[in-house]
Image 1: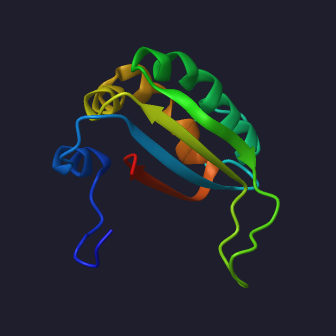
Image 2 (image 1 turned 120 degrees about the vertical axis):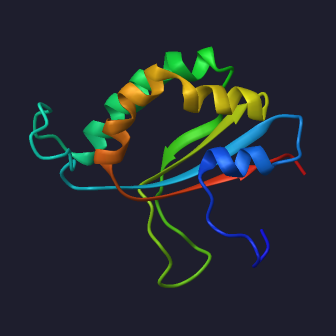
Amino acid sequence: MSAANKLLSPVDALQQLAHAGPIDMVNHFRFHETAHYPEGSDEPVRSGREAFAIYAQSLGPVLEAAGGCVRVWRGKVHYEITREGADTWDEMMVVRYPSKAALLGLFANPAFAAIHHHRAAALADSRTYICVPA
């Protein structure tokens, strides 16, 4: 990623991507202790991990319909060894999509929109990287 890159929406970033093959989304997650649902929400009080678990479980069929799959793993972060004072993440996950069209289809799917509030409530911080095979 060059210094000239600016933060784009996922849709804008994908539309600018000149790549016809598979795309990997590398995700870093840090959870709220208690999920932050909007005021007035009918959702019960639950932890960020619990809210994310609801999102992840509901995402499975939507992800599969878009042709995506958890590519390598989803796991808890134990320890970062690369630098002192580094960001700490609770979990990381790599998801593969067969093409940018498949990923754009996921973003446009009403079923994805219907569950996304659980992800938003769960996460205190996250990073998502659009990656292509080298």
